[in-house]
Image 1 (cartoon, one colour):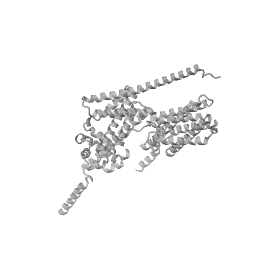
Image 2: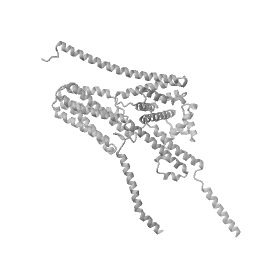
Image 3: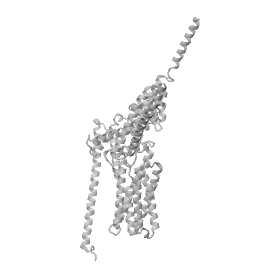
Length: 332
Length: 222
C-alpha cells in the first residue's frame, strides 16, 4: 500500500517534471528577443527605407508638403502603435493575429535587411574604409554572419550609395521642415542664393565624419556600375534643393538651374576633401563665390537680353525712318 | 440563463442599429474624405510606375500646347493683319490658356518639362509662318492637321486613363476632355475657313501629321 502511494507520488512528480521540461517555448529566450528585435528594427527600417525613396509628388507646394508630412506622421504612429504589440510576447501566434498594422510588420524584406546592415556598417567606415570589410563588420555587429556581404552585388559601392541616399533623405527632411516653418509664418523666407548656400552647406557637412575616406567613396561612385545610381541620387538631390528654394519653372530654366547647381555642388565637394582650414571655412567661402558667379551670370544674361531688345527696337525705328525719308512708305 | 439570453436578444436590435449608424458615419466620412480631395489635378502616385506614366503624359501634353502656341504665333506673324487675323488670334488665346494650365500642373507635381522645348519653339514658329506664307488656306490646313493630331493624342490618353482607373483620375480626365473639345473646335474652324482649298492639301496634311506623331513620340521620352 505504502509502495503504491509512493509510486503514485513519484508518477505525479515525474509528470510535473515533464510538463516543466516541455513548457519552455520552442525557441530559447535569446532567439525570442532576436525576433522581437527583428520586428522592431524592421519597422524602424520601414520608416528609413520609405524616407530614403524620393518623396512622391502631388499638387501645390503646400499640399505636396502636407502629404509628405502626413506620410511620415502615419509611419511614426504605425511604428509606435505596433512596437508595444511586438514587445508583448514571444508567442508566435499573436503576430499572425495582429492585423491592425502594416502587412509586412513581422517580416523583414531583403531591402530592409540590406539597409540595416549598411547602416551598421557605416560605423566601421573610419576603421576599414568604404570596403567589404566594413560591411562584414557591420553584419557581425548585428549578430549576422559576415557571409551576408554576398548580398551586395555592387560591393562597397552599395555602402556609399546607401550613405548618400540617407544623407539626401535627411536633407529633404530638414528642407521640408524649414518650408513648413515658413508656411506657418514662424520663419522668414530666405533669398534664393542664401537658401541654396545653406542647403549645400548642410548637405556637405554630413560628409565631415567620413571626410578622411571620402575620396575613396567618390572614386567608387565613378565606377561604371555605380554611375547610373549615383547620377540618379545627384539629380534627385538637385531637384529637391531647387524645389524647396521655390523654383517652379517649366521651361529650359528647369535644366539650366539644375545644371548650374550640380556644377556648384560637385566643385565644392572636391574643394572640401582637400580643405584643411578650421571648420572648412575655405570651402564655404568657395561655395559663396561660386553661387555669386551664377547669380552674376544670370543678371548679365538678363541685361544682355534687354539690351538686345532695345537695340532691335532702335534698328526698327531707324528702318521706318529711312523708309519714310525715301518715300517708300507711302501708298500711291 | 435563458432570461439573460433573451435580454441579450432584446437589446440586440438596438445595439445593432447604433453600430450600424456608427459604421454608416464612418463610411460617409471616408467618402467625404475621398471626394473633397486635397490635391489638385493629379492624385498622389501610388508607385514609381504610375508616377512615370502620369509624368510622361503631362510632359508630352505640355510640349504639345507649347508647340501649338508657337505655331499660332508664327501664323499671326504673317497673317496677323489680314482678314483671318482675328480668328487665328482667338484660337491662339485659347491655346495660351491651355499652356498656362499645364504650366500650373507641371509646377505643382514637380514634372520635368521636355528638354526639347527650344527645338519645339523654333520648329513650331517656322511651321506656322511657312504654312501662313501659303496663304490663308495654308494656315488653316496646318491648323486642321495639327488639331487633328492633338485630338487623336488626347483621345488615346483619355482611353488609357479610363482603362486604368477613371475614378482616380477624374480631375485629370476632365481637364483633358475639356482641352480635347477645344482642339476639335479649332479643327472645325480650320475646315470652315477653306482649309481644303490649298493646293496639295492631302500631302501637306499628312506631312504635318507625321511630324506631330514624331514630336509626340520624342517628347514622351526626352
